[in-house]
Amino acid sequence: MALSTNVTSYLLTYLLTYLILLCYRLSQLVDFTVNRVLMKLFESSNSIDIEQCRYFFHIELPSVQLQRRFVKFLANAADDDKVY
Image 1 (cartoon, rainbow, N blue to C red):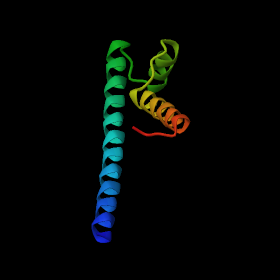
Image 2: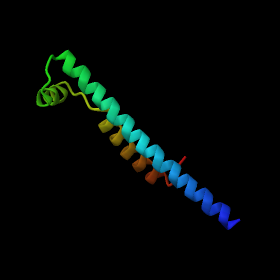
Image 3: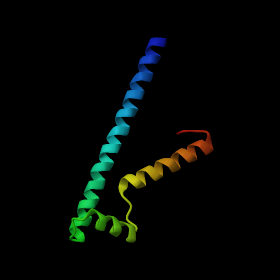
Image 4: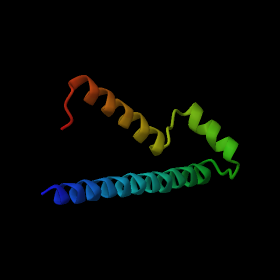
């Protein structure tokens, strides 16, 4: 019984690690896509110009939004003392 618990724990840890890396890679891909769309929209290939456009138009990258929402989720989970 203890062996199966250890194996299950290991598999869950491996799966969660894989999912976190997958989400990170997907967020990088979406960030790249957003930057490319903005480069085409503003007809500029200068990353500093695109960064300024994002700042002035209040456009957050999806990875920043995801990180902010994750921190908010963890704060709410800590307040509730429950993770659903």
